[in-house]
Image (cartoon, rainbow, N blue to C red; front, side, top):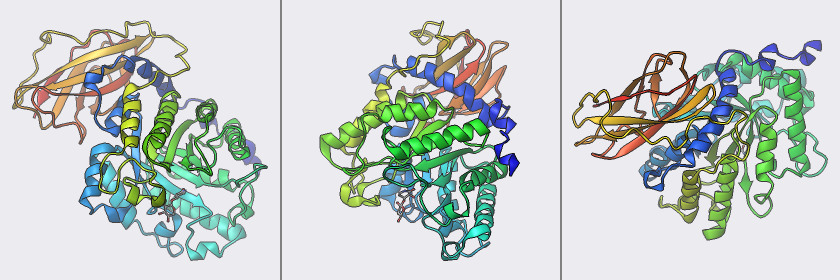
Length: 478
Ligand code: XIL
């Protein structure tokens, strides 16, 4: 019992490894946001995922149903617009462990493979929940249920180890309404510590995935449920329970409207030292009203450095669990709605974070891209390509934005090499695959940005420590 109250030292110190790296990323995200304010609209990204990636490496995703992956209208929109997936039902307990200790991952794997083969992130949803339990689990209680739940968490998180960016370890454990109590459920009745027990089991099974608590009606900062989740996360952080993030489902409609203090909620959770994500966004309504609410949600996320991504709960209105409320960004034919245009333009406008970096950038953020021929001429591929880098630097770090431009006949893929100054190293990159992190570093296209038409450009970015000045990229096309 007593070890429950002993802080996990790995959570109190910034230990090496992916979770520690996130701490340093937070500063870079702030700097990236500041730099991106200068992006010109002529170069604006044309898809949600690409634009979110340019906003400090954020993602823009969608909930996906495995049985829709054979619908070409659906996959055309999905593959074009998004760079993150959450399985809508396929990773829930009833889907992955339909009989006790018999695990089925076929449908979840289809979704995971769709995402990982394209370099997208996957949110695992969800390991422990009162709902969508298989019959055998619904009938369990007490220590047998506690063990079965921990076994489920361990087996599923182990199976997907290394493939999941973030896990919704526990979903919807708090009650609605006043009082901020836990929701009554068979899991809750196994003891109040069931949530932290689930997080510790997930951490042991997959030490690199980010571990999240996810809920709805936690958007309004003044609601008791929001405050209760806040106090739980604060308590977990103070005792070293392994938690990395909080998901706000954000299913908005007249009963649970978008609140004007939403940004306060996001920034308050972030201030506890966790990432926040908008995990199941849908906004019932239509036309300008709906579009404006989507715009507000995006602006609020972009204003909070640790709001690392947004997932909409479905692709087209007809795919929605609340299709009658037409709450999504595409109509049933896959056409973009006004809500889509508002979302993309809010992403492209990329508001500057309200909380400035502790160490202000010292470089000149308007640093123009290198003009004229690069010092080292690019290796010519079929049509060749060239690359320029612009920097936003501060004392001890930088964010580099690299623009890749196709030559006379376009590219199928590209590879950009550059030598980092001595003492500099890359901590994080977006919209490109990377090999090496200091000295000679190579970036290659990801699935969605390898093809560039003749004379057109794409951008990727990376964050580094040390000084990035004087880098001269070379580009080779395939
Ligand atoms: C919903 C799915 O969209 C439906 O297809 C399913 O019938 C019920 O669950 N909160 C959650 C999601 O965490 O898992 C829910 O998804 C929506 C509410």
